[in-house]
Amino acid sequence: MSKDVVVLTDANWKAEVSEAAGPVLVDFWAEWCAPCRMIGPAVEALAATYKGRVKVGKLNVDDNPEVSQAFGIRSIPTLLVLREGKVVEQLVGAVPQAQIAAMLDAQLESVGVEARRA
Image 1 (tube, rainbow, N blue to C red):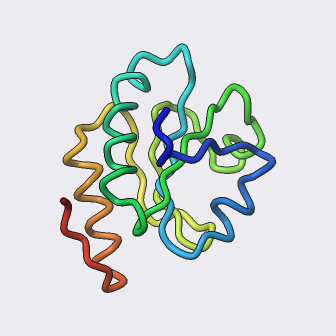
Image 2: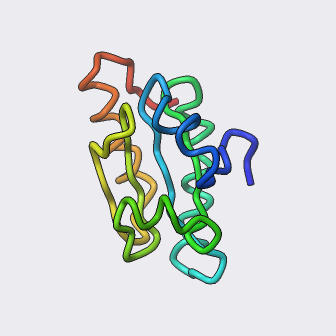
């Protein structure tokens, strides 16, 4: 996993996501999930592209049931964008990297942060 991606857990969720200063993209995934493995490289690439503007993390649903249940995650991969611990955007399934980037750009633009991708 890329050094730009934060490994999220039930234990560090509050510090890494709920108390984060800006938007956080969370990829809910599992090792056995083929679509999760398909979008993994896209999530890692976006973590590098949006570094300093969007925190990107991955949460393994099998290892972290508390957060997964709290957000009602029933299908994976599920991508959530959270601000101040609240969900502001959601995508479910193996979506293209461009679609995820467009979602992040819209969120950044809504708060006046430069959203242009490198």
